Amino acid sequence: MAAVMRLPRGDAPPLIHGEGTPGARWLAWSGWRDVAITTADELAPPGARVVIAAPHPDDEILGSGALLRRLALRGTPAVVVAVTDGTASHPGSPLWTVEHLAATRPRETRAALMRLQAGDTAVVRAGLPDGAVGRHVAALRDVLAALLRPGDLLVATWRGDGHPDHEAVGDAAARAAAETGARLAEVPVWAWHWATPGDARLPWARARRLAVAADEARAKARAMAAFRSQTQPDATTRRPAVLGASALARAAWPHEAYFL
Ligand SMILES: [Zn+2]
Figure 1 (cartoon, helix red, strand yellow):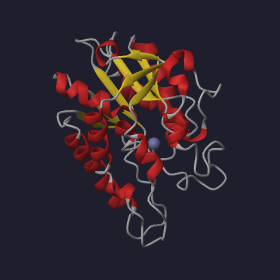
Figure 2 (cartoon, helix red, strand yellow):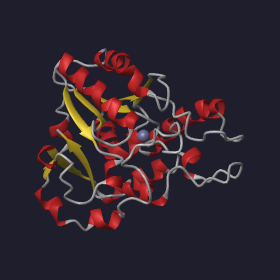
Figure 3 (cartoon, rainbow, N blue to C red):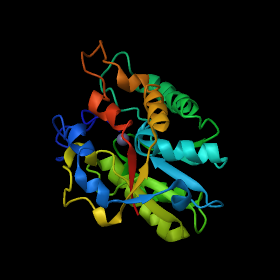
Figure 4 (cartoon, rainbow, N blue to C red):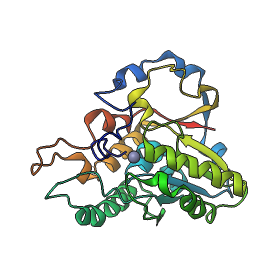
C-alpha cells in the first residue's frame, strides 16, 4: 500500500491525507448493485496465465487476494511481480532500516501467500526503488511484457489510484498489455481512501466485482496479518502502524473490484 510519510517532502499525493472515507460508507453503498459481477474464470479463462503487479508488498493481497487464492486452488497459481521491496515504509527508523525491510518484506509476502493457501504462487522481484517507480516505467514494462502472452491477464494497480508508485505500475502495465496482447485489469487500492461512493473520478463503467466469500475474506485478513512490519507501531519513531485499521478492514470486504 505504501505510507504517505515515505514520500519526499512536498511530494505527498494530494488525494491521500487524513482518515479517508470510512469503510462502512463503501459497504453500505447501494451502487454496488450496478457494478457487474465477474468470476475468476471470466477474468482468467483456463489456459490464460495471470500476472499480478504489486507496487509494494501487501498490495497483491489487499487488491487481489481472493483472486490469488482461487487461482491457486484451481491449480493455476498466478505470478506476482513485486515491483519494489517496500523499503521506504519506515523513513529514519532505527528498528526498520532499509536493510531490515529489504530482508523482511519479501518474507512477509511469502508468509501471506501461504496463509492464503496460495503458497505455490511465484514471486518475481523487480527490485525497483520504493517511492520512485515512476522513473522506471519502461524497465517495468519490459519485466511485465517478458512474462506475458496474448490472452493472459495482467492485474495492476489502477492508473488513477492517487499514489505515484501505484499509478506508475498501472501505466507500465497498460503499456505491457498493449505490447503483448494481454488483457489488463486495474485494481483500485488507495482510491477507497480518497474517493467516495459513486465518485465520478472512478471509471465505474469499466468496473467489475469479484464476490468474496466469508472464508476467502477471513483468509485475506489472516494473510494481511503476515505483514507485521506494516501492522505494528514503531516504538523507535513513535509512529503508528503503516497499515491502519481501515486499510486492514478493506481486506475483508465482500468483493474485489477490477477495472477492465
Ligand atoms: Zn502500495
